[in-house]
Length: 119
Length: 111
Image 1 (cartoon, rainbow over the protein chains, first blue to last red):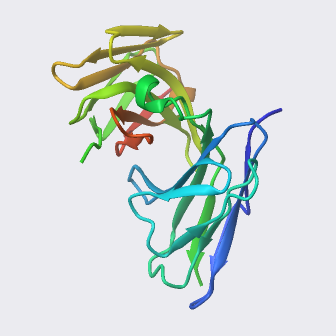
Image 2: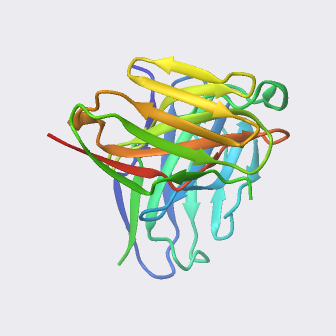
């Protein structure tokens, strides 16, 4: 079955440590996204990528980094510069938004998230 | 901010009753989408309504859109305990290539 796989499901970070969250999709989607969700809150966009080898900052990119070397993969690194990383992280993908300005964004498919906590 | 805002923040009903959630937004949009999130899981897309549509149905879901009031509503008819989840609206502002999500409505359906 096609879908998005996030791993690990739970992750713990020590002070001063960088950690990487994995996101893999086999939906053949061009666009991928990373969101952060805090308790009782909506989703805030961290980074997004519309095509391989290209990505843009979202609303809360500070303290995070990404790469998009393959269409299927969009890993997120939470760096030590992110002072409050405890949150639920969600990865999503969608078909190309190349025509988004005319047609609007298409539905996004989500993984089941990674819950990151500080040790 | 483009962000949509859902209302109410929380809603508690009995099985069989209808549930209505509202979403307001601030800018012109291409489309508006509704998603469901079960506790501890990712979001699942429910329905998309375009700016030139006024109403759309999908099974027990009915979505309306009023672009003059910049608002949308999601109606779940004959609710079931399995409908217990948080519901989010997401707006697609014209000129932007990303969605903006609201804070969600938490729906509890009791047997």
